[in-house]
Image (cartoon, rainbow over all chains, first blue to last red; front, side):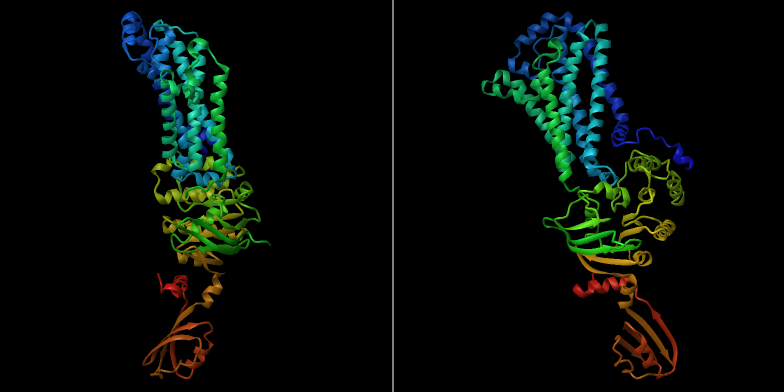
Length: 276
Length: 299
């Protein structure tokens, strides 16, 4: 074995999933730093909000109900209500969805567009194993960043007098993880079926936006109300995980979306011609 | 022994875009099979159906007697593939890329991989992103050869290689052949095919134009013969020789295009005093153009 080959850094090169994560390792460090900073800024503002609770409540009551629903801002003055409004109803899902949809769209379609998929698939590895390993890489990336968010909340919250029980925070973070994974897997499925990274990103983001709006406006628009159960965001937040903890049926529904999308990815990718 | 690759009426259509139509060929074991045609003729399409990257519209192709769709993993285990448009993981170094592919393949002799890296004079510590086209091609070649596959499928292998590395590649092909390996080599570079291959298929606009041994092909081709005589010869000296396609005679000098045996030419010339004879064998370039010329008078 030549010296250079022996010395090269082999970590993460033995499987497809580990190599995929290895390629993302710098980006993931920045994601972790970004979520940590987001949590820090959020909890650091809490003492100010709390001190001016009265004015904020008045301000909120003057806003139209639909606007409050859109940003999930209903209660700004309890720790759980504040975290839900500032972090879990809008900013958190957006950040994690960007991470997950990006990873899902790149998983198959990204490699196909860059042309690296040809050599990967002519090694003795089945197509479905590549899809599963890409899914695992995405799952680990999303889980890691959500875990960083949870740890940051548990560690930094009490320093600013923002105390929500760790298990309720965990319940909200679990939902956040499942929501992001569901949309990431939808992007993976569209990418696997079409080979287009742009379509995978665009279509899954579009579905996310529409279902978010559906969930937000359904409570105040009568004819939309029955349809809100079609929105993943409904299962993500409507049963108030920050106060009620884990809701088993919500977890099952969100996980089922992921499973269905993964099956679609496996079936469509198996049948398709790869782009040259 | 059974043929390594067999295509039977293999067809791949892409809507209005051209694919390949009714391809029939067989690649015998232990041979270097050239797959010759201009860019866009369907060479890459053929290769990608063999490797299950795309599926035929009709007809079939088998590799080692296996069906690419159902037994792709078994085929992939035994082949080495160099794509025509090589894309590698930019964020890895050459060495890391090879380590990754070796790990996915299993059963790669690291000693041999390292030897190939040395032979191609490749620096495995450089990030692929900053490698030149030629150096990327070297990484591609090493990953194709490093597990000593039974069948090498090489799509335009010497594209971007400097002459020295082309020689290194030619030596490698000779070694593979000596060890009984089979090579399917697609190229639009004729001298390369002529030099490396035993048998050649010529493809054009998705259709097979000819499949023949290189020797036969060259034997069938016309040769150019020049004769210099001691004195002027009659203009009809070679008129009755069947093998002569064309004769240009000026005074004591004759330039002939001859197909097949030279016997008639030599006997006709022997009636006069011959000072000098020179014969030039047709290159595949000319054969190639001749095949194409039959249909549209050259490209």
